Image 1 (cartoon, rainbow, N blue to C red):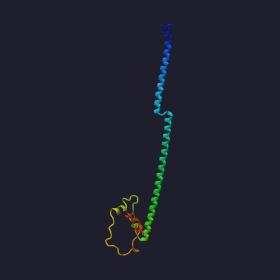
Image 2 (image 1 turned 45 degrees about the horizontal axis):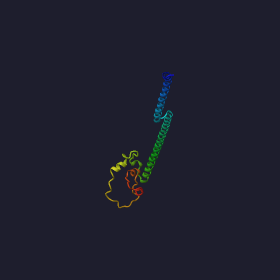
Image 3 (image 1 turned 90 degrees about the vertical axis):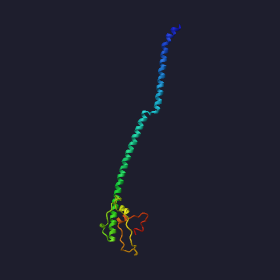
Image 4 (image 1 turned 90 degrees about the horizontal axis):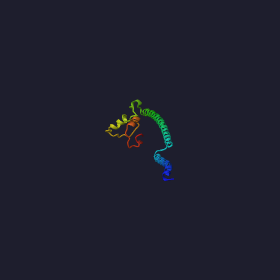
Length: 167
């Protein structure tokens, strides 16, 4: 056999082997590119798990927001009930003070307790009462009028322990 016939017999097999090697190398390179690209991107299962976790957290947050809203409503209603109770106790105190002092409860000016900036406390702070021109030489007696609750609320007791003012 000569070289030409050997080359003619081996050439198709060599081209086939070379083609298979080329395709194999191309596939290996492609797989490596995918693995490096997938290292930065999560797999479909990981993405699905992330979405499920995010949806669960979102559901928990929505439930928590509903609970907070219900708690705020409940606390608001409790505060309203307590303020109404305080208002009725203040009205009772005004009546008792008026009964002890001989004044009628209608004589006391009404106090807007929800907006203290417009009530008597704001006017008392803006215009303090004028001091008496003549000091009292007489000791406190039974004839001293007892202040009403509105007058106590309007008075400025900053720095006072209130023990001396309420006796």
